Length: 157
Length: 157
Image 1 (tube, rainbow over the protein chains, first blue to last red):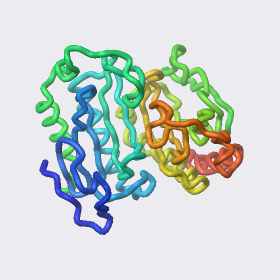
Image 2: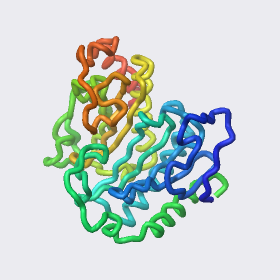
Image 3: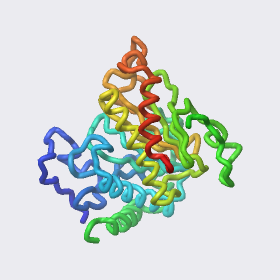
């Protein structure tokens, strides 16, 4: 299932971008979470695991829901490692701008524009040809691998 | 237990800073992990949960060890929320510079030097008086609360 649907829930906040919109290219949606690709040209293999209900902080989730989310994060990380052999994986849940729980899962390469700095720091270099051409895999093929991996974790899968 | 001890393990890498050194102010060390405070003047309530064995990526940990680590991360987050009522908690595991698994747990405030940008971005403002004076709690008292919370999670506790 890869169509974004707003969650019908008392937690819905019309002022929250991640309640209202997918927030990126839809990869897969389960009852509790969705996986999107961030569509960042500098970091093409940049996915997000978004908890569908509006929850601000990690510690607001129950232990079972934390385990469910991290299972999805781990599955995305494993696909990126196996498909791309990145220099490093970066994981983060920040939410300062959009305080709706989401995890960034980013494949980093020693040739990328910011390496070894975090993606939020200043760029260290220009990259040509475009990063997407250096992945060694088409993005739709990568998306399909991510979708398969996380679909297997969806309740009822 | 708050003294740093190198882990006697085949995973020890003498070239790795987080194998060789605590990496910050020691808060607590268990058999598998330690908690340190980053000693960052701009972000005084910045802790790290470091896996003691040298492991590069999150998905290299077993499911049981992942749950153990996130239990510690969650406990640190809860103490920061309860003690400081921060604007937001930021969590991240990057490791581009030091690829030895560690989680950043950072209390962010709308008055801090970078808010709402990540701590790795450019500063947005100067903060005076110093951030540590604005926490409303002495750092040693905060450290003690963090230590108590994570000690309860250590095997054998």
